[in-house]
Length: 374
Image (cartoon, rainbow, N blue to C red; front, top):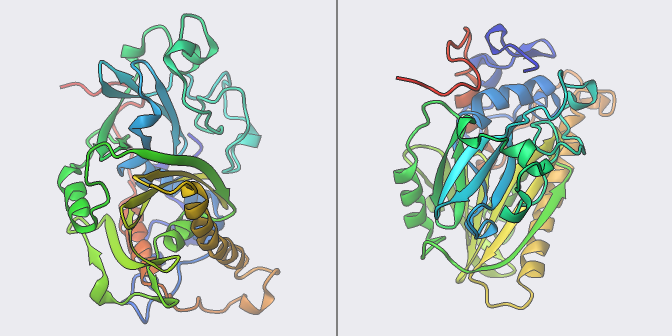
């Protein structure tokens, strides 16, 4: 742990968990301003996200077809926490990794920058993830077994799991919220997964130089003739964790949904593209992309071209926003933030603010990495 949450989250002279910090960003659409650039360039802000989002919300980590065989293991870093989901007896078991900080007694300075490092200890919450580990590589005394499972995996802290169609979700909270009804409502609204296990047509990894929040906004934005769709074609869930809009891709009608915080779904025709967002630095995001039910020979190329087009706008916005109020953009020093012109961006700011202001301000009595009893 790099920061005691009970001491608060402060940077650049602001209390990052106070309602006042988000007041302008959460005003009604049309008068709301863009969120402060601190939200995309501050290490302290990323720690606040770890405390209030990644360890509290349901987070998508991949799809079931990645681990088809009994014993296969899917690693994923959620915030600064290394976890995995393993297929066991036909079901899914989630756990924290055994070697949370690899072989280090303390977190090295090079790992405290907010950027995931390339390290041989891929189980660490501060290193980049490795690919799926097949059951055959998890034998006794193998490095993979020692890092992820140890000799007694049943003693590891459990992680709650859930499935949404083919997608795997995890929740690190001690007492997670129920999400089943919310996911059912989303699927009824968007029809993204008409069967529990749709055919996986293509999958790949793409990484972009943009903060995850900005990338999610641009990937999930509905567009018709270049304009953001109005409120008459938008739908929010009662629980407030997803938003659906309609638009077009390559001239085809499409439906877009953002399941906060890290799943973007796009449907065009019978195809569904699922994009899992994973922050790898303050200004970098890994996209784990999956295409289902496609009959195209060029399914990956078709969807990748659309994702890259949208990501390019996110990269440019991140560059401009991260430099706001600095010597790189001297004309913005002391200036008010511009109006938020994206309704998807406005919704994202509200989701972020609702969680940030709930940051704990006193010590949490539950011991870390100990099973809850009673």
